[in-house]
Each structure stands twice: as structure tokens, then as C-alpha cells.
Length: 238
Image 1 (cartoon, helix red, strand yellow):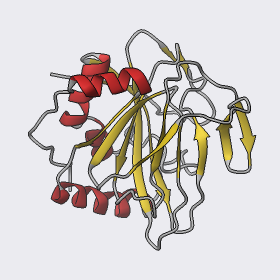
Image 2 (cartoon, helix red, strand yellow):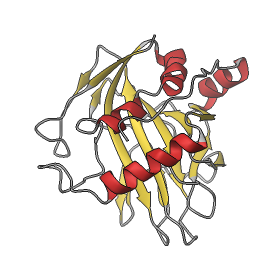
Image 3 (cartoon, helix red, strand yellow):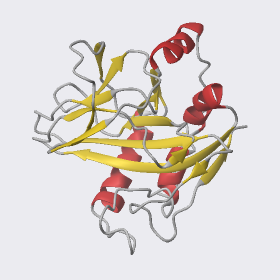
Image 4 (cartoon, one colour):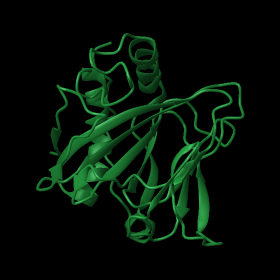
């Protein structure tokens, strides 16, 4: 397999979907890859990313920013359907600055509520694409989105499960929506959107792929997670 085959269709966001994005910083799911296409992608990732040897210098996290060295991963990020939807929110010039595979195995823990905003971007303007490689269900530990308009970056608290958002003791954070997805489907959410995921109570893994894009003009700061050949990739939407 060299590159994943892309679906020929594009998606025009409806007025309701644009309102949902404005209100909650979330929209989707949409279909990026057909069942046959995502099966080929799943096989490639399983054999070459999950079971393969990580590039030199990235042994600490071999699932991180593989769009830099792997052309298949890069083509997934540049998928025409995904880029088309992103362009309706952010314009036709996008900067791909991060990607990561999230492999939640059977028995995998829940992820606490958090935001994707951090200190890497200045200004911290970013959209996250979250795509299902395996079925993402309540049982396998699907993504959860808080349906609430949050524009501020909340303080973070470090716990045993990693960082979580400090909600300031609020009893009601908003409606938490389970986002179940079939393989090949994706959603978008902004950097301040509160999200989490359920534990994997099934006997199957739940592999997801996430990547983040920003717009030209800002500054992308490197931190200890990055590596010598790290680079930002510009995506120009036709």
C-alpha cells in the first residue's frame, strides 16, 4: 500500500452545522473513507505504525507526529473530504502541526475532561480532527464532547490519569454527548472544546487517529515532545 484512496465526494456544511460549530466548537461525524479504504488504512497502520519500529529519536512515543516521516499518514491528513470541511471553517491555507494515533486497548481507562489548547501555539488557534480507525462505540471507549460554548483556556490539573480541565467546582458543565463513529468517520472540534472518552469495556481495541491544524501567521513553538526532523506541513485546499 502506498497511499490511501480518497473518496471523490465533498461536503458542504449546512447552516445548522455551522451554527453547531459556532455554538459548541464541534461538528460531525462525516465520512472520509469508504469501508474498503479504511480497511486498507487499518491494516497499514497496524503493521507499519503499531507493530513497526519507530523512527530514530522517537522511541519515546512512536505514535506521535508520524505525518512527518510516513507518506501514508500524511495522505490521511490531506484527505480531500477532511480538508474541504476544514476549509469552510479556517480557509484554504492550513498548517498541519501535530498528529497522533490513540490506541485504547481492552480495559483502557477513561480520559478525563480536557481541552486541546496548550502552550505550543501562539496564538492558541487550532482545530482537532478526530477519526475512527476501529469502531468507536460506548463499549470501546468513544469520544465524548461537552455541548457548551467555551472560549477560554481553562486551568489544568495533573492527576493519575493525566491532565484534566479545572472546572472550578461547577456542578453542571453542560450536556456530555457520546460521539460514536464507524471506521472512516471523523469529527472536528476547536482547541477550547471540552472533551473526554469512555473506558474501553469491550474485548476489542479502539484505534483512533487525531491531527491538528492551525492557520498561517501564528508561531508554533517546539517543546520536549518534538524531534530533530519535526516540521509543519502546509495544506492548500483546491
